[in-house]
Image (cartoon, rainbow, N blue to C red; front, side, top):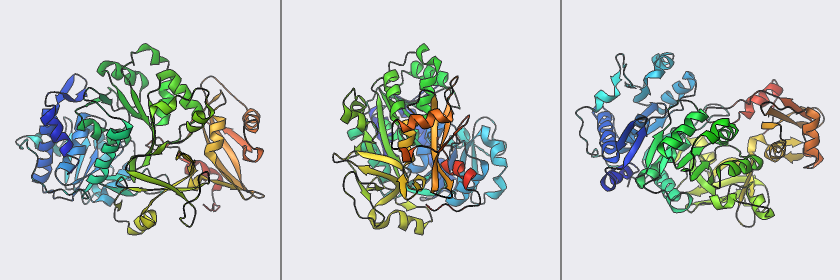
Length: 519
């Protein structure tokens, strides 16, 4: 069994149902299957072999899904690259993966020109668009290719997707995701996270190279459509318009995107009643913001905790548990990431990798068929991260007695002040309750007496303001005094990587320049 067979089976069962929706274009499953097969065969005709890597640098569009699926059908692995990254970051991924072909959107021609001469492994540049300028034209390489699946022998543990981590601490690592990993992910969605239906429409408002792309497989499996908004950036009116136009039912969003949609005055101008599911994950979603989102959009939210090394769903908090009312137990669980999913085991361990009791902090570790095969060409990092057969996530948290997972922070983000462990996530939750705060990041900065002290970096809501003293006093009213920020700085925005995660390392570097921070 391989993940590409999901599309073949959907084309047999739902040949006339829409597979891709883009502008005025509707591609049914019969045609989607034929196009993906023709691309897979074209890659083989160019000299590609099973096990080779095919990279893609394409904005959200139907050809992007085809480029995602075709290498997998040919026994190759896809290397999806986030379009917001710098050319040097794409250069690193292409060279590290040894990609033999690159499928790119014509708008990235000048972008790639900056590094093109430094890509020795890339033998074929395939351009999606009208101007290939000497490169292979995407539509032309499909011409004349058979519409049936290629005759490739694909095993469940063969590499399917080389997923480069977000790289908040240096060069990203390529997480090797197999067909087994992706099938497990899809099965978990269908079993206990989001039992999608054939009449569902998944709108790709977030990059298909990341979480939104991971949501494709279980929708394909049931014959549900993928749709694309008429925007290359995250533009709320365009997103709302697409929801209304396609009667979209499902979105994957990172918390920042939810907050932007929530703050948009255009939200009430569109009919969003078709939406029944918004998955969110990839970064902290604070309880105060989550309650506002549920109030605005309804009980349609599903939280997912995972990472590139174990995609999308190690734990899940379902829709019904987002309706807390005044129940103190349910309100507390809103701060959790839910409970482990069916195919995954979750533990919390100490520094000696021994499991700790419920309620005690430690590193979150997981195992199961969702977990990656290892890091691409990094045996030492693989051995360290997968030691003892468990994926060490680098996240700090605890499990309660009912199995709900609470993620307090990344291991490297924990602040040690005067010998006390302080978890920024807890402080950020409190600061987010202040009405003038839109976003916040809490970091540790050097202090001669305490080693580190707490600093809050706050982005105010548009048209509102607060003072440092107000934020500190607000924290004192809601938490132990030793945890409160010693200083507050107001910023117009927080630095984020291409996946929407706040770059705390970049914030810390402003204060730790020339000094060593022990983590």
